[in-house]
Image (cartoon, rainbow over all chains, first blue to last red):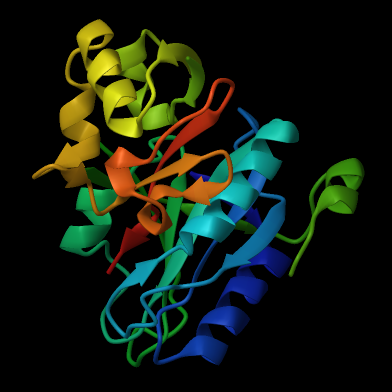
Amino acid sequence: MLTIHTKLISAMITQSLKDHPIETCGIIAGLAGSNLPLRLIPMRNVAQSENFFMFDPQQQLQVWKEMSARHEEPVVIYHSHTGSEAYPSRSDVELAAEPQAHYVIIPTCSPHKEEIRSFRIVDQMVIEERVQIVRQYQPELEFQMMVA
Amino acid sequence: MSITVIIPTILRPLTHQQKHIDMEGSRVSEIIDHMDQQYPGIKEKLVANGNAHRFINIYVNDNDIRFQDGLATSLRDGDVLTILPAVAGG
C-alpha cells in the first residue's frame, strides 16, 4: 500500500494537467527504508512525447547523488498517461528498474481523468496496490515535506 | 588505474549487494569487461550490439558518456563511473 499526503497528490495532478498532452514525470524521495514519500522533484521529460517519457539523464544523476547524500531513495516514481488509462504500459514494465518504488500513474484524459493508481513492478511483474491518501503526516515529517 | 564504479540497486544482486566496487581499466569498455569477469552477467545488462544500452545511463564523474566517446571514453586514476538505469516508459 502507498500512504501519501494529499498535497503531494495535488502537486502531481497539477503538474500532469499543466504538461498535458505531453507526458509528465518525476519522483518523490523519502528516507531509505521509510516507505514514506516526502520530497517531490519534477523531472524533465527529454522525450517530450505524448506516449513516452525519459528522465533527463543529467538531471537524474544530480537528483540521485543528492538522494544518496541524504540517505534517501525514490519512494514514488510518477508519470502521466495522456491518452490511456492509468495502467503500466509494456515499456513501463520493461524499463522499471526500482523494485522498492511505488510506480504512480496519473491519467489526464477522460474518462479516467485524475484517477491515480499505484503499482509495484518487480521482475516485470505488475501488482496494483491501494493508495491511502492522508491529510497529515507526523508533525516532524510534515515539516520535511516539499511540494515543488 | 583504479576506478570506483557505483552500482544501481537493480544490478546489486550480481555484485553480491555491493554498492561500489573498485576496478582497473583505462576505458569504460575495459571496466565493463573486467566487471563481467568478476561478476558474470553484468555486461549483457549494460551493452547491446557493442554500444551502451539505450536505457542505461553511464557517467564518468558528472559526464554522460553519450556526449563523450561512448564505451571508448578514456578514464583517469580516481575517476568515478556511475551506472544508472534510465527512468523511462510510455
